[in-house]
Length: 79
Image 1 (cartoon, one colour):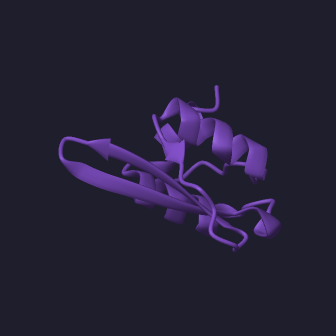
Image 2: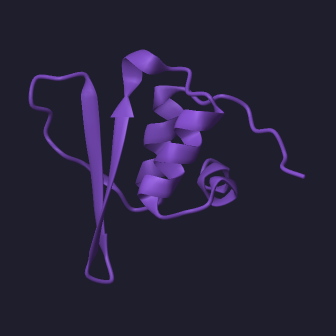
């Protein structure tokens, strides 16, 4: 059985991504921010669309997958 996690704000997601080693790419005129990290020769890119906040479980699951971590580890990075 999965544990319910609360929705996250844009600021919380950005804090999580920083802890996970991601850096923001310069924005190119859209509301979408792209955060990137290279690890083991692989590029991870997470798309964050702040106007969609607070982020529900589906978007959080998608961002965690883009980051290459589980939802549990994504939330753990917030602590």
